[in-house]
Length: 93
Image (cartoon, rainbow, N blue to C red; front, side, top):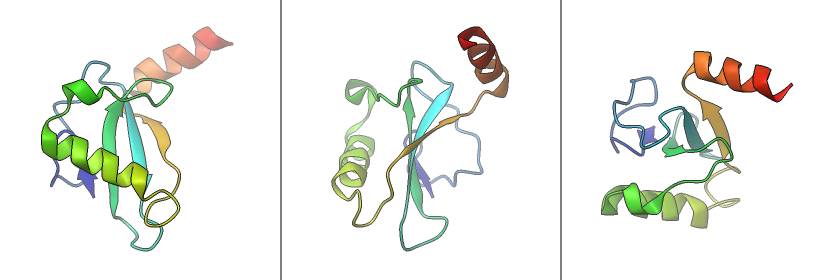
């Protein structure tokens, strides 16, 4: 799997550069190859900041978006900071 912050690092590895938010990742999972996916720093609603991405990461993001339904499933937003996510969930209720 590839993460947006370090294109060749598996998702099981912690990323040190999660962008401005640092709490959420937008995951695109492959429809055909289990374990193959892309992950990009995003906000709570799944919005990514293209200006903060280098060219390789931006190209991977645009590729994943272009291949929705062909190579990748619809993306999901995942929380990478359980403490922050629990605070966000309790504030919303």
